Image (cartoon, rainbow, N blue to C red; front, side, top):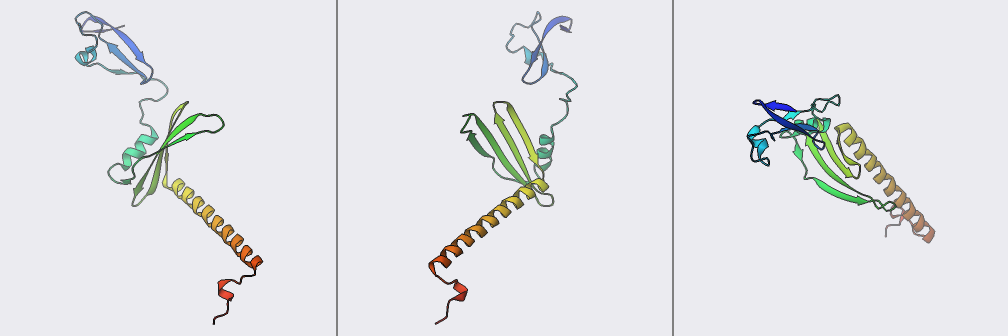
Length: 163
């Protein structure tokens, strides 16, 4: 219990925000629904989890706000076939002229929210791997088509006689 202006007040813990709020259920506060506005007191809980520091995701996102070009957030809902559990992804990309592309991913599932800020080097690695897979797929498809034409007896375009 704490005291505001000499009046005892109750302290309640809100687990979702990890805050301690002094509730003005003391004498003199008739409207308990609006007592927080009258009191204007909000105390933050200080613990060993460093809740008072800004998350890396927020720092990176805030640092690029106003200096980078952002895409619209894309929301993708995925339902696992085997388990039937769903997860939702929100993906957004920021392009900075000097730094490159930063990808922001938020994943919401039954265990909570996970937020990632993928730096430009990681974004470039993902793009390179995707390009590599595309090149391999095209090469394999071209080889399969060339083999099928060869089996049918067709000559490649560069070997056909000009008439």
